[in-house]
Length: 298
Ligand code: GLN
Picture (cartoon, rainbow, N blue to C red):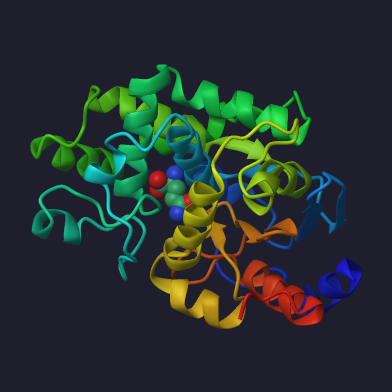
């Protein structure tokens, strides 16, 4: 079945535009495509370039949110909302109207507050994330791609602006450079579709980790999946629900993590992006996948 998805999207490989506002990302071969599916038992299958590492970028935002919530809901929901933004992932526009409270945890402003919260909890937020991803994927070789991280820091004016702006409203607890450094490191972790599907499996398993321990309660897992559905693909979340019909989180590296609650986690990757920063072949592959399996939640 995965082979069929690869065939269906073959004409789309290389479509779209590779993100170049982080120059190190622009060097990736745009014709790559991979897909992997991890079931609740932790079995994983894949097709195409499913074992090739790529930059997870904003997909990391799902995991940092899960890690923060695993230590209790605390004050996070006073600092960030849960509504779709309808704006670009790196937009500043709503922050002034809403007094430094970002719309949701998956736009950059919201993810920066989540990282700030994780730093307050554990110090080394990206290290905590890496440890979690290694354990869940069973791949101890996962690492931060320093070249991508340096490239993003060198072109990070927008995220600096967002964080300083939120700090002016008192919505940043740690020094702005620390928040940016940790955020950029979390985004620069390189993972394959195989690693990512396994790491996201707990969201399909109602919050239960690979070793059987509970990271999240059922209620928390349900809620993260809901935020992925409504906010995970930014101003294209409506289109994603229409075409794919399951929770999903995209990244400008061209990856998407999608979840069929109670069944499986799916990771797709193809670097060519549409105007809203979502992988063209990746969204198409998920559209085929949920149509072939009947696993859209709608
Ligand atoms: N690191 C990227 C940024 O902050 C992540 C954006 C994304 O993947 N949508 O701009």
